[in-house]
Amino acid sequence: MQSTNARLVRLLRIGLGFGACMAPFRLAGQPAWVSIGPDGGSLSRIIQDRSNGNILFSGSTNHPYKLFRSTNKGGTWTGYASLPGVMYCFVQNPKNASELFGGYYGFHRSTNGGLNWSSNYPSNTYFQDVSADSFDQNLLHACGQVYDGSKYAMAYLKSTNKGGAWTNSIVSSSEYGCAYAVFVDPKNSNTIYVGGHVNYVGKVYKTTNGGSGWNDITGIVTGYVYEILVDPVETNRVYAVTSSGIFRSSNNGSNWTKNAGVAYGYVLAQDKKNRNALFAGYYNNVYKSTDWGATWTSYTNGLYGGYCNDVAVDRSNSSNVFYLCSAGFFTSANGGANWSPSNNGICLADITSVRVAGGTSPVLYAAFYGCGLYKTINPMAKAEQSQAVTWQVFPPFYSCENLTDIQILPTNSNTLYAFEGGG
Image 1: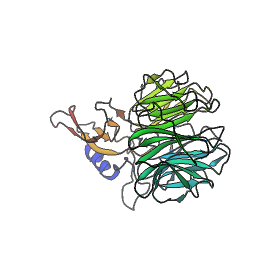
Image 2: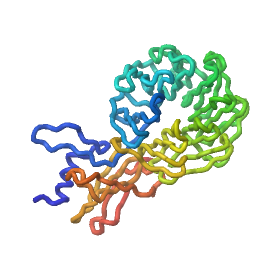
Image 3: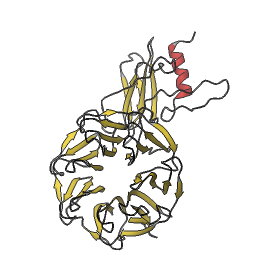
Image 4: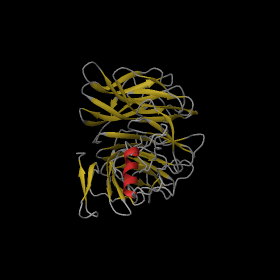
């Protein structure tokens, strides 16, 4: 009879690979592939379906590119469809929920809720952010980089046929640059804000004529600009989230105020039911403001996994807040005060090392790149069809958590060595 350890090693040999994902088929006479986790992995953006708020979409940021879908607000997920590429920007048509748009190198469109995609690849163009127009469903606004013959420059891009073709406007032609954020005035499609950096200096630009000319409204804003948000009712309220903090303006970007207490941020979301409530996401943290961004409170309880890729507020219930990072999807049911991972069905974990501590009851350790160290004391449960494999994540013990290997001391299985190689 095989020992438990021998069976576990055999399972690992046939089962663990990128993301601990197992193939859904087998050759005749070969053992079946079994996914034992840990669930999770890096996802790009959160889309809450406009026609059914229980449905969420998100796409993987690493190969294999896949669209994940939840029908219960992130409680469980399914690998819904393959994506033609990474979706660093991702948006739904506000007037047609079956249409999804996004891309990075290349731009992609689905007309059937993400099941199938058509693509085009404008030459020397990279898309970083996209916004669907509030009035014209054929009109898309995007930003990123365009090669102008000598360098990649900060660019605004516009499509009048749902991404089928694009025209670009170089926002700043003087130096190398990149635009990370675009936001269109909800009441006036000709007023557009773009943020990013020019020659590695943070910049905010604004146009009032649909992109034909741009004004530098950076003012006191410092740091790379990663997100811009305009209030949908009081459109004079504008926010810029940067690597130096959060800045806000009450006069359409003519003047800015820096908010104290926020070191830096990546994304920003507004509560649609309570517009003075804002959520900013950054590394293992969410900041919340209930006074239009004047003051902020940090919420970290339950969060882990590194850089925040997105944060969103449930349109129908402001207590529900969603958060994405390299560890996957997190949800809060109390306005961000507490967080729990909810990655059932997301099989994207980048496993860099797996070690087994011997004994009659083996313990399995897995290094999840960018998310730290995981442990399970029932690694054979799923293979034996007794129960689900349960994983415990260790508290962060190194700032970036990019573990490349782990070792177990042969003379004491409770002593572990972790190797970090992510910089």
